[in-house]
Length: 114
Length: 113
Image: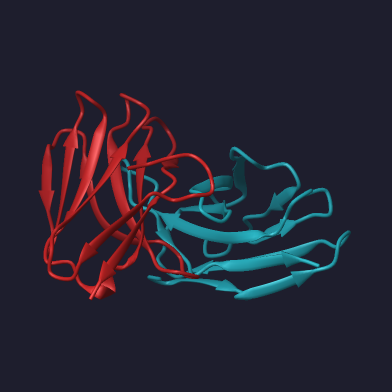
């Protein structure tokens, strides 16, 4: 999992609650990403950040929020507005400058809404 | 190959055989491609990548082939082992100012001992 940590590994949430998923990297990567994965499906991009204090919506940003106050940290908040939040959430990071770069992934957080 | 929906395409091979996993990508402007391996309950792990100015790239026991004419990517695994059992994803980088990747839905590789 190459220097990217996510916590917690499992998270349970009651309907109507906001929860925050942690992602930290020590790879000195500029860019960080959040993906959602549903059973039997590929990864869908929620938010990404190319630099500190800046982030962009991905394909499925509704019901989620992020912040990027530090280079090594990119927390994701799943809000009560997200209608179907039960999923496997993956954080990734990459270098940003100098052309296309590989994204390296963390171990994931499995969120279940009770 | 890739498909849409909840049922992953599955490739079943005998231990020791070679495996070929296929992927059709969507954008002819994509300039960088990556294969990832994902074991159950874990994050995707980088296997090998290839840039669009190449047709073939080899790693340890793995080879990626790129056919830009038909927008097709394949991953070949030599002498497949039980530890290779996982879901394999291809991803394409659309180019431009960001490093965004588009992922396929994945292929489940099942290695029979």
